[in-house]
Image 1 (cartoon, rainbow, N blue to C red):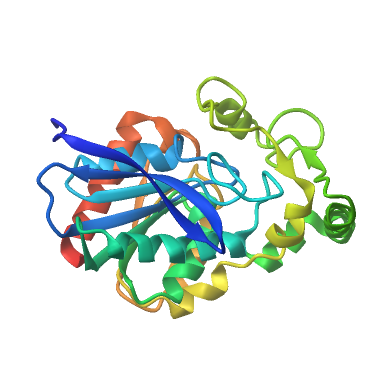
Image 2 (image 1 turned 120 degrees about the horizontal axis):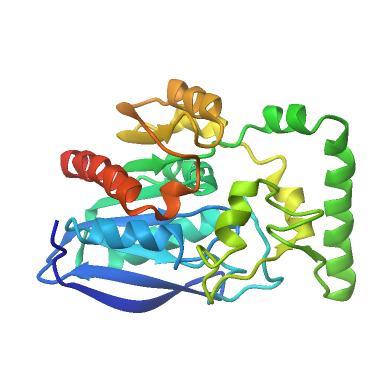
Length: 296
């Protein structure tokens, strides 16, 4: 399909006196339109998966906002590369307020899209913010605290203790201990598929830093998205694949949702092609468009 003309604007808003930087995309001629906020994978920045979906949905007539969370990319926040799901939820809430303040946006037609871990983070924001009228997920990873413990077994408590020690070290010295997000040895995302994206030119954009603050694990390991599903009553569409991350967790989350819901299963080579494969993005964006045109 041919893309309409889209105006891109670099924008900033504050969260707890910290500047958060994003890109607002507005279809030309848009007046009080529906708007979508995008949440992305762990450690990611706005030029990666969220930017790709923001472009695709702007081409389909929505105002879109992709942004760098605090501690990442162009946004401020110390320490750097600090993956804190709770703070990301706070960022989403500030972003919803920012969108509602824009003249191009109808404040009663705000939605959101979460990709990979962003879906699990976004769930907590959607559950507690009545500004969100509908939302969708693409290849969502829906954190399950109990399952995380089971996956890690005897490594869980030592890893958590190491993260707590890293946080105490930062508080004492101002130095954040980091490991690579992807690569060899101890990394935040050990999947080969993750390295194929973040560790190669395929997804390694200039704004991205291949680091992960060790203290992040104090927040990410016990994070639970599943508990939010019961409190989500706005219309939901979930796009997933049997080859994407953790289909059983996606099914569990879907079963617990409290409102109108639809789960769409697609073919994929894995998780990562949902981030950047044009055909996969177009197919997912078409499902999102159908959903948001119905409910926003």
